[in-house]
Length: 110
Length: 116
Image (tube, rainbow over all chains, first blue to last red; front, side):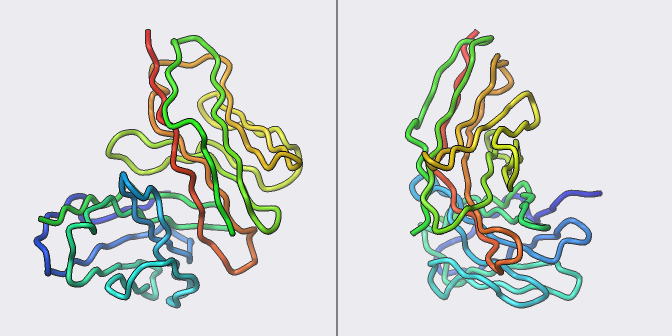
């Protein structure tokens, strides 16, 4: 089975712009979670989608949003980018409590 | 509140030496426990997990971990470290399957340096 894929792998944006990241889970996995990783805050949970519905949400502002499609692929969107949004964004698909991570999208905000 | 503590930010060991990375957690119920490894610029790779049963679990690359409920610990061990083990290691806890919660809480990570 193919692993979790994330596109794009690298992204450079400027403050105030918006960005959309994509995640394709492992075939058969219906849950997709998103995490932000920064040197200062470490790995933090953003949100989780299951069967096209947001099931859990972390403590991030409303500028961070996501959605899931009927084929379980997920996107996350960040609007009005800030310098502090520069991070590695990791997506994970899960089955029965075990999460499998993608390679991440490195977002740099200038 | 859920939390994971990895008290060692950076550990340096000689190749061939044994390794133990510490992890303590705080969680409302018996959680699922995980160790992940991350190489620079990469995603997280699962080393091993504990769901239930035998408290000593074996993982990939020769790693093992022991769950000690009384100490709320899940320490990672390897008897002989290889240079390729140099990476960042993360301990994580999560809710049990079927609870409707699927988010992991991560520790701050331990960076492992291996010297020849």
